[in-house]
Image (cartoon, rainbow, N blue to C red):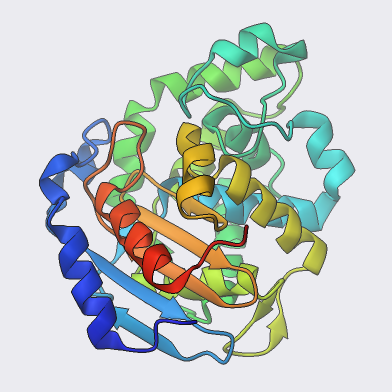
Length: 309
């Protein structure tokens, strides 16, 4: 079944909003503190391109860690799995997404997976382009193809806020550079990383991206293949095993769909063959996932049996 009634979706959004005060808006990135914790919106895009939505779906927010799955798709298309996974692992972790511990204890500082910060920084270091500006534009162009929206950009305020406070991420880069996992200028890698995390879009555009992965790489709005089926498969697998930080196992049991979250409060879901989901709810739980967004997905799962398991 699919959620075809906007009235039903609106009622579920209102129900999920009731738990907003149980989460906290991200404050370690100063620019993200300004969000209203009561905000909650959702869009669902189907294989035929139709959409149902609730809340202010035009309100823009930054991708943050959701951009990690986009970058992974790009480097997989450019270099292939063998090259990428020589430098980044495929295993989930129970540690926080910004942890440095596993770099110290794993072989040659190889990050466990591309969804933690260390792995995403390693992926970013592989991005094609002669300089930071070229690389960011390359990523933006791909996001524009995924969303069928030519005006997608990044938020300079958030990018600067992240760039000037990303001391731990710089440490991760230097640690990996010391073992030859990444190459190139660390400050350039950080510039590209913070700008792709600051790419901004709305719930409808996020749902469109989720629908591309759900449809094995085909954009349902244009019927254009924007990524190979195998790349979409790999990305969805990482979304299941690592996409919700170190709560991915619990999420797989409770919701059971490929999904990726970001600390801005965004969640991109991809129900294989059925729909793409875009959610924005700024208050986070203790591991960094949208608290209201998770509640909404639980309600959707209970009503429409979204789980792929």
